[in-house]
Length: 198
Image (cartoon, rainbow, N blue to C red):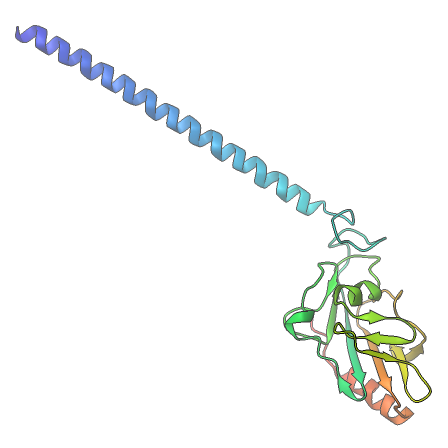
C-alpha cells in the first residue's frame, strides 16, 4: 500500500505543479498584454503631441505647429499712468501658442509662427482695437476728446497692434491717458530697461 500511496501523491504533486505553472504563465501573458496596450496608448499620445498643429482645438488661425518658433518680447501697459499687471494668475499661460509665464507679466512668449498679438489679448479676455482697451470686467478705455489709446512697437508709434506678430526682443508699449511726449518717453525708457526673461 505504500507504493500505491506514493504513486498517487506523485501524480497529485505533478498535477498541482502543472496547474500552478499554467496559472502563472496565464497571469504573465495577461500582464504582458496589458503593458503592451498601455505602451501603444502612450506611444500614440506622444505621436499626437509631437505632431500637433493648428488643427488642435483653440489654435489661432494661420498659426504654425506648436514649437515652430520661440520668440520673446517685452511689454508695458500704462492706463492713466498705472501699470497693468500681467503677472497675476488670471493672465498666466492661457494659451500654449502665446502667453505670459512664470509669474512674469512683462515678457510675452510666442511658441508658433503666425500668432498675432490679437490672439494673446483674446486669450486673456482683454478687448483691444485701434480705439479701445477693454478689461475682462468690461471697463473700457476708449479714445475720446481728452484721452487717447496709443501703441508703440520698438519706440515707433503705430495705429493698431492686433495683427502684429512679435519677433525676438521686440518692445511693445500700450498707453491710455493724456500723457505728454515727455511722459511717453519716460514709459519707453522704462520699457527699454525692462528685462526680457527667456
